[in-house]
Length: 115
Image (tube, rainbow, N blue to C red; front, side, top):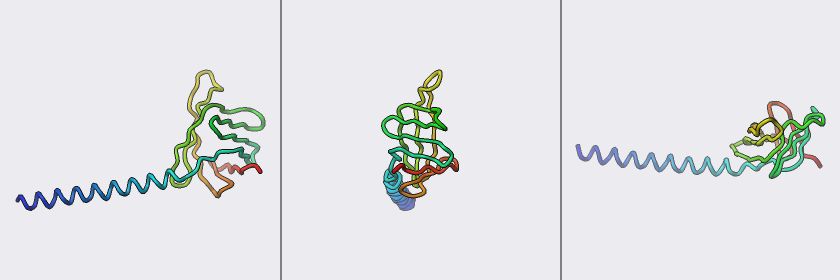
């Protein structure tokens, strides 16, 4: 019985090690996805300016503006703008999916890097 317990314990530690390795690899891949810093334009007339502060405009009207953060994923990430262009500051989330180095998509709208 003791031998069975020791075997199960070793198996559990082995699986925990494999899981930890998998998490670190996934984390490393997610962290390698760059933030879309710069000025971006969509064919629909939207402009997105991304830096330490961010702004998104549609046809000259500011929709969201404020400090922003980037949470990377394997193919893009979540851009969060703490919008101060409202009654009370509130986060606005954008799910960004990279298409290539100079373009990404947000809910089907494709943005292209300026320049």
